[in-house]
Image 1 (cartoon, rainbow, N blue to C red):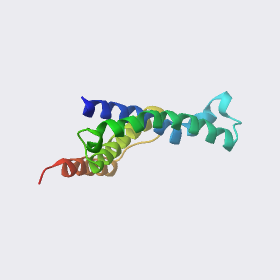
Image 2 (cartoon, rainbow, N blue to C red):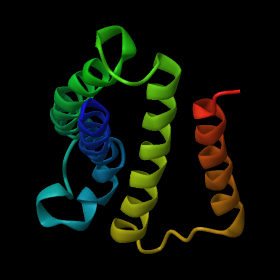
Image 3 (cartoon, one colour):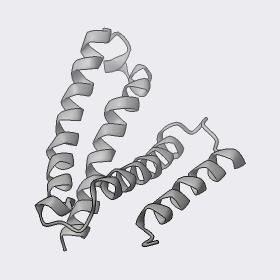
Length: 123
């Protein structure tokens, strides 16, 4: 159960972080965002990043073997990176319709999935 909680919280966490890092690139398309200063955008992004931490920290605590969870530190980081790229791909397709994924992007993502396999494999 802790493993599932970890993954769900990491998905939520990475969704907030993706919006904090890249969502502001769409602000200029809205009337309210056309004249925002850089400091305003940074403060909005920090506000979103707060919620990223609200989920990231409990995810890592619940998932870490040292705290009774099922994952090693390396496994947690690998899961997090795979989730980050998945969320980013979905975000890019939904919110930045001009962005296209080419074969090399998909191959690169496949290699990251392969890395997850290698990290979790008991050799």
